[in-house]
Length: 185
Image (tube, rainbow, N blue to C red; front, side):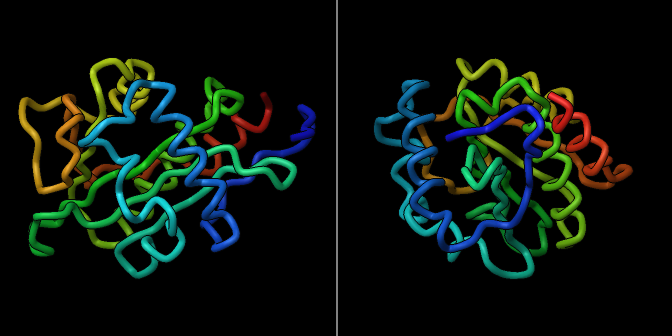
């Protein structure tokens, strides 16, 4: 992975060729944070085929790359166990390699996804994480997510113990501006 500070970060939709790289990132980051056991996203069948799993009008998965190397990704889809009429989507599998953390890329990714969720007709976004992923929680709070007492839906992620949600009805975030700030780093 040869990169320089002048090589731009690119945020783009996932491609089938990205699937093994994203699966490795999910595995590595989950393991790094002690989330390798039962009840965590690392065991979801979709991890091996993210590009196929997030196709359609009401789902999407994006990666962040630099100089052709994938450093992370995140996606969204309807919250499992909820009815389409509920208008609730879930932020899913947002993981970044350590080299891509702390640069504003998570903020840019989240801004893009919130825009996409709104465009797909969702009214609210839900997510699950763990209490020990404090930096992720800080990002979610800064993006308007509010912690809630109980889980929603039927994600199967009973290992998660921190739950957040936010309305998607407010003004769309500035995706391009967030990515420009991240590119400067």
